[in-house]
Image (tube, rainbow, N blue to C red):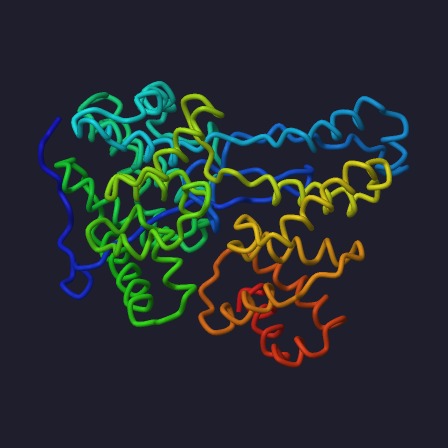
Length: 429
């Protein structure tokens, strides 16, 4: 394969910045759990994955879901099993980043050859990596996954034909990278250009449309300038979260401030892998080894997310009006979530979406918990307006409605501007 990387000329104003991409969790309102997309998160990650094996209720439209469940004990049993085993979908994007990690004993061999093997055997017919027959509006996610897999193969000098097919897919679909109608994984405007620069460093050959490429660089420059000029803790966390696209521009010591007890960065295999590549941290290594011990030769976009997934089940069962059939299972979820809340578990308090949902559901079931953690996320969002995930914004909005109705001191502190800001952003304003 050719050893040159062909880039359109970049404007000098944006040539010094990098950009990163991630998947997001997308909720399927027809199922009881959440589905993800393989790439990176749309906010904790957009990550479309093969559908989680969640169980949907088959409902007689004239009699409702409750009647259907009464007639179908097998369906109830399948739903009960979901409480005990949360299904994760494989993320080609995250798996590719884990495949790029070198061995701690030799930089010339991969630390996780099983992930590299997975990449080698999971390219689709069109040259991409991701979901077969992916949705037309998820091309940014597919581009991110495909480029990450190409980088992993090139990093270890294998799969030349697969690399050529992957590059061809990226070239044919490159215009989608700036298409405003496409769904964007979290950090896409930072990560994707950053990975393109890494491709250049690896001497990959890509023929890219100059208009689209320069627009990507411009967006990256705006986001990074805004983040570098701000002292916001949220924006610092964002820069750490999109580490895959930062490379040598990243402050890796700052990133490690966000390391969790399980050794991960944000429970994200890709962010953790990027950090491990630069810092060789034993905690990061143990986290990735643990994830692969559980999942085999590939990883999901977020792990673990047990609390969030089970809360989604409780929420959806309640909305379907069939929660009384699962009273024991729901009570167990509520008690466990309450215990984690009291103990300050990272999985709850480092995610605006999980924190907001846990607050709303626990309060709704009569648990006496403080609204202060949610208020902190609301204040951060009001100051920076940086959150792009509509589902997390909706969780915050629903939690804020509950705070306004029940916590007068806190609601006065937040005032109506937080509510109006969220309404405006949810409406696309």
